[in-house]
Image 1 (cartoon, rainbow, N blue to C red):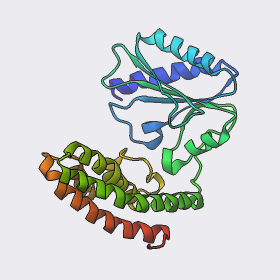
Image 2 (image 1 turned 120 degrees about the vertical axis):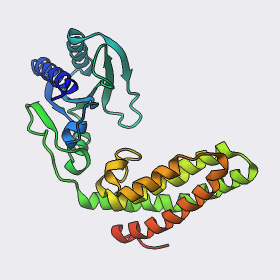
Image 3 (image 1 turned 135 degrees about the vertical axis):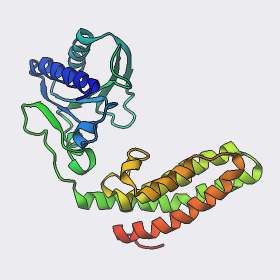
Length: 264
């Protein structure tokens, strides 16, 4: 076990012990790389709690516990843009291992559907449970029918929007606006391509954006995507956009076949 692993384990045990003493904290578990079985020397502590009461009081316990270990040098309170009902804070500690931080998320007991989403094993791994008064912190299989519906709906959106963004890329290149072209290229061509490829190569996580691509895509496909992202000069963007367009058409046909989506 590395120094970082020891530090992380010590903090997790200390946090779970303190929080278990509060009746309003119903469960505590670790997610992230620990749940996915991908931990390494740079992994953070992805610490989660299920709360029935005052969330601020629980975070006060978290911060007191962390300060007993080391000075908190920075706190980021996530602005709830993705999951409005969750409360998430990230803490950096002085003299902690390289790249380490503590990511604490509070799930409200009153929103069971959010908890259910994060218990899906194929998407989020198997939670490492510290304590659980509810019996709800356990990995569950994904709803394959709901996932397929989501993929089909997203595929329709992508197919409708892709020609627009493709046109914007080449329009801005012809105008000499390389930065504008690159913005449209990355957001409107490359990212949708990755979503479509996700439906083929990592269907349960097709909507994870750019995360985990290296371990999700075949090596040749990953290297191709890598080349699409790193463009040496503005004059190279046109040929890359053409190549993205060609690969998109190829991947779209396969994604339609796998999801049972009609050709249009």
